[in-house]
Image 1 (cartoon, one colour):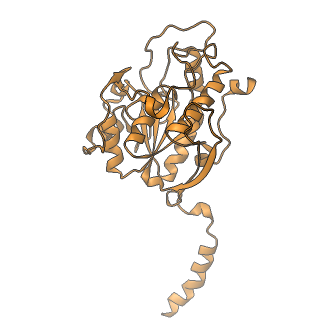
Image 2: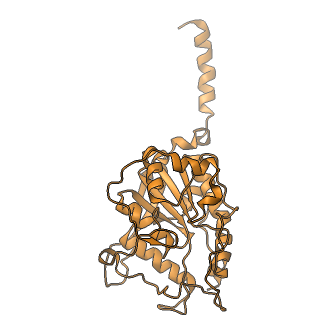
Image 3: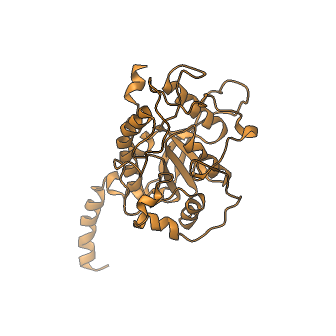
Length: 297
């Protein structure tokens, strides 16, 4: 060791001692999540929640944003998406900083993005065979994973009226054209509503952990070809961000209560039969999101 090196060592020691945890790249830290699940108890009330800690590699984790459209046929649903979009965007920003891959899935609206690199990224990802066949039955413009009666029974809410909870029921139509502009699509993100394209993106990045957020939980967040049922069947570690979702449910239908009670019931259903959930706090370090109207009920 020469004299110059000996003189530098104390200086380097001081510099290293001044480093704080925030000086360490966030991508180097694990994504620590508190996963809430429940035992599957068909025909009985939901079992008590059980929480477990998990540390996921952010670089092997993806968040899929389901159907956060620019508009919706139900005004109440559209208003809640508008309220949710800002906090969701902040969560996605924090997730990106940790190294999580973001896939935007605005079903039937990917054509809006046909010339973007994010859309082309999904279209050109190398084909990867799936461990089980993808669903081919269609509903609402994409392939669809229908409820599995042997695994989950029926949903705990009656959404047979399509779930509009406005006092004056809205006319069903398809007003959406794109994802809401309140959610940033960053340069490194991808855009798809296709099951095979989603699988290709995950395989290309060796992603094991898939997180779902968006709307609506009792419909698209469970049923779309990139969503919970399909990802579980494909063998991924799946989780729902339970404060970053909503349902289509009118409490005039059984079992009653409030709209937000209905959402809670569907979250419990997912935790029993499909995958655990956690809150955005695990990603942002901030309090979980709550709809303003939920506090009034």
